[in-house]
Image (cartoon, rainbow, N blue to C red; front, side, top):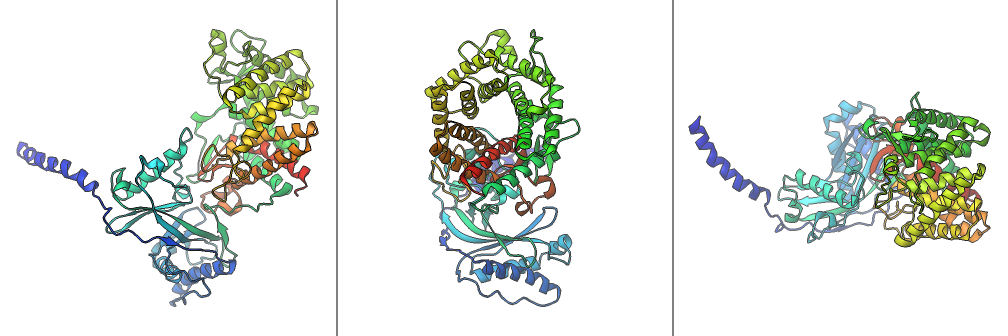
Length: 612
């Protein structure tokens, strides 16, 4: 045994020295791949020819005949073709051609599919109902890797594919890998940088290199032109970042349909207790993650369902909102040493934000259905908000802070603005001077914070707009519109040019834009729009109204519709849900809740602007 150990030790030492060197081999002296730049503008008939050729090639194989090469195609001398076939359970088979002409690429992928034994095993003899997706290489360019870190590489997730050149092969990361593989990074600061770093780690791991291997080989990015055919004979539909984009002129009816679908998703995902499926990941078909369930977002979802009922008159949403409120009352108790007040708790902690949203939900409940018990709860919740406020208008976040008299250096995000809005809404039909005074102090503090930081708060915009109705102080209207203007200056297609076709209506706090930031900002802009109409400022109302319509277009492009659920194992379960963003498949209740209220505002703007 000792002799064996003595023999192994030198071998391990050699490996320890040699292995990093092998993994760090430098391939930058290889002859680079020539750049490709194709102008791919296929007509519908040309897409149909390509789809028909691939399908016919598969069917002709079963009959012992070979399909003739495709005709009537544009002359593309150097490209690459990728073909994906999707089964009903979301699983897919993917093949790709080498570099060559478009006709050669189509022939190669057809041959590859024809020779693939998985086709018969997974799809059977009838391929008419199989979803076919074709992606044609549009351009390929070498990336400059002389950057400080991988996060600085100019890569747009979901649009740009990556290629790492090795001596014996090309390691390819397709643009659609992040969506079909469902590996978007978690939320938080520097998300785009973390996403790019993850893309590079996955690419170099596939190449068998260390994480910085992309510096020791030629790295390329590429774009494709893609389309999808859902059934044999159907007209193929153009794809952008794997999505079928909506028509630009969405109009009132299109926005209303999207609002209804988002509301339907919520009530379909609500149990008998009133609790929601908090988080659903459609690609792996996994849901809930109970440790993440939050009463703040639950209360906000009740508010969203009451709003959906107000807009549509559908009693299903009213019952869903009532049921969710019943669940919430089971988590609501008087805060410690304050038996006359009421707070919503999370893990035994009385929360300002959840209590404010519970009050806001009851304010949204139809007036004719609001009971004396509801009003009592509203006053007790409002009393808790007032108790959580300091003399200068700031708010504690949790009740323990109020008991200790310890104000954190920085207020919690959103909660103070939610409290301002809830108190302003309550005062509209319960004109207790206490609610008005608490709201005034909150407004003063939030306006001062905006003037100090230049950063608007979406809930504060709404709170100021509603407070103006009860207390028409010009300061509130001015601050509301100033904050709204800052938000619109950061909206793609309004205050900012957009670099990609699916950006308009989104906001530049992330790239690509995300659904919830777009929806929450649109909620705020909706109240600014209503305030403009309330005071008779039609020019401003039209300006903000057009921004609302652009936002609605972006939000609804993140909604699961029949056209973009082909890659999911349970398409019906995802329908109507609002995903996190163009490369984030997850659906969470607040994504839908914010979108519902945002779309309600966009509907009003569409009607006002005459966009049907």
